[in-house]
Image (cartoon, rainbow, N blue to C red; front, side, top):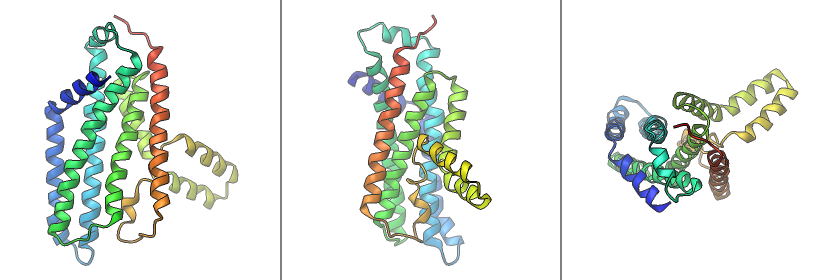
Length: 253
């Protein structure tokens, strides 16, 4: 598994499209400096929101279009037969790939986070605990999305995996709006159904603390710890089902 992790990490690091994404991410983070000067009264909030948003958006692009492409290349290029013909357990293949991808996500988020924090220091913006948690939660959201991509890739095509994973990502951010809609409609049956349905989806909205930076900061440490543990458990569960499906999957030569 360790060799697969290392090889996967090296393969992604050599991908030119990844550097293109990283370049534009850095450009947009630096662009927040100019954007802050164009706003009146809330320049600090604009810089913080824009910077955190760019880190997540370009991470999302990376997961959906770089990592998913490399994942499917093993099957499309028939190299999966060569790999699985060796004494390698299928679960080690999946976990090795996942940890290799995760390493690059951590590296990219860390690089962007350092640049983002440098921008905040340059603009004399206080780096609060909530900003640091928002960066960590962004990493968790990308890790959850990566596990979802792995899961759907075991029984869906590349395009379908991207579309469904993106749909899950968007819906997971919208449950409060959906629940509020049915509360207004006073539809208790649909409201309960939505609450039950919400359990299946990842806790993206709870991890989306960047939206309240500058307006609300009264969070208990239990909130951050609970959502961190919940996110890791969600990833483990998704990976468990991914391994189970992949272990029973047959590949056509």
